[in-house]
Image 1 (spheres, one colour):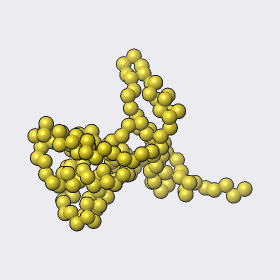
Image 2 (tube, one colour; image 1 turned 120 degrees about the horizontal axis):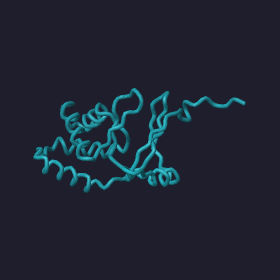
Image 3 (cartoon, one colour; image 1 turned 45 degrees about the vertical axis):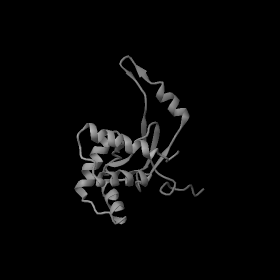
Image 4 (cartoon, helix red, strand yellow; image 1 turned 60 degrees about the vertical axis):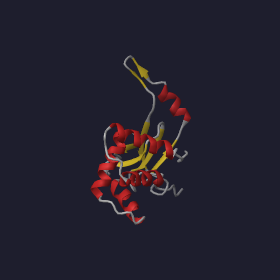
Length: 149
């Protein structure tokens, strides 16, 4: 799966969202957006805040939380809740499968064109699918009991 995003179009999308919503375009909001893109993985708000702080860019935790909400409202970040864990975010992209280990909590993403083909054909009288994200729970290779036989 490609973790490459068109950063310029994401920044443009956020700028457009902020302009239309009459929100301020602050350097802090853009720093948070850029760090979220840079992480290339699932993250919670605290991990995002720590990553920004590690770069010696100081921003309040509240600003990170508020900006993450704006990024979600703008359609840039997707919020996922895996089991009882805190909400995790990722840069929004369509048609992927999350594999979540119930023991250690690792999250892996895969694409499966066979499953994608079936899901995208899903339609009923009042619904037609145009994208999907699926979550599958199990045990990862490190947590799965090995066959000793």
